[in-house]
Length: 549
Image (cartoon, rainbow, N blue to C red; front, side):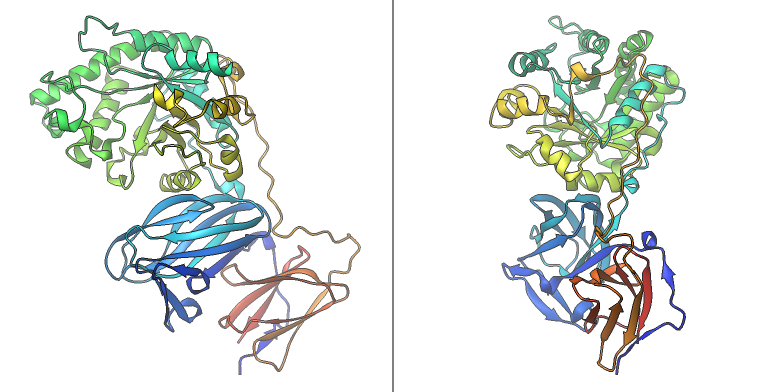
């Protein structure tokens, strides 16, 4: 017969060192679409769910607002499968490939408010076996370990100041941005229609260096200088046309330019790439001479494969990014650049490396969707070790700032593409623009500091909510006695005053019981729990260690 007994000497554990968490069994979910429960002694709770082509849904209650890592414990007996994790309508893809049951993190430091949250596992490919999902509470300060220095050695002071400004506002505010096609076309439209201009302006070297008679090659850097002089942030990308000049194209399906020649320094392709890099470096050098920093985002969306720099796979693109960095920073002495890598799904092999990247961006185009995309942000934050600023480097429809605040989605900035993405209500309504540009969470151009003298600000750490909100008066007697009983798997608790809110956690910090006891006695069953060490916690006092044998 299983019994509970108290240690002869009761051990007290500092509660802040106990991981607060909760496991939700797959078999407790609402199943649909062909998902079925299966019995298995080796699984938590004695069952798992064969997803097949179905879905799972839980309504999960969170007692107090906090940040959580979320894990799924599952197996993929039929080989690699991609499916969708959803919480409150925010979604992210996850991949399962191990035939054995393993735990994988699918959300990192996700902010959840107190109350009920709807969680789903949705079919994309389906056909995984799910044991449980698990929520583990983490501290607010565990969300970020952002690098304090730029990857460029000895950057100009104004680049360091701009990077400090980005850091100081990360997770506290979002920087408004907009892409332009012609000088300030979209910033002017926003000024006319909302009364405000964005803090960040997107520019492009797309037409530079091609000897177009109708185009001023220096236009992007002139616009960058103009906006920076108004305390705006210039962000420049490069739709890099065929370096051999056989075409005027940058899309893979319209040019045969071979980026893999980056490995052959004697090839015409290599020489053409270097020549173009040198030309653009000359333009960027002009900005450096005027003490203008630039957010520099080359070779964007590479793993998508639709641009020639991504047409031959990860290795040549990664090499080209590194060659460009070396050529610009070490050969040309550019010290005014903040380097951005634009991620695509499953592109870990493409990443140039932490030594080459300051910020990681994601280009998101989901028409009419104004969610925070918090799971996308969370996944990227975790993937890059929480060391890199994460930004929405391009978008069609931008997030509603209320959703960013509610979900704690700490995108550094957002930047809708030019034209219809800015002006067409299909993507972003004028009412949403007006709300956003006047929102306290959103930084607009008129709210920017002088970036040439910016010295930074110091923020107080975010306060940690108590895992239990205690309303007990200070003079309440908090002594507690725990007794074994002759009844299988029952724990008996007695206090000198009404017990109130009580929690029990296993040795992994997973919550196995919670409730409110209005009397000074409680009888609690742990019939569904395994033998081991458990911690009893009440009235926000230290946890008491007990054994179940």
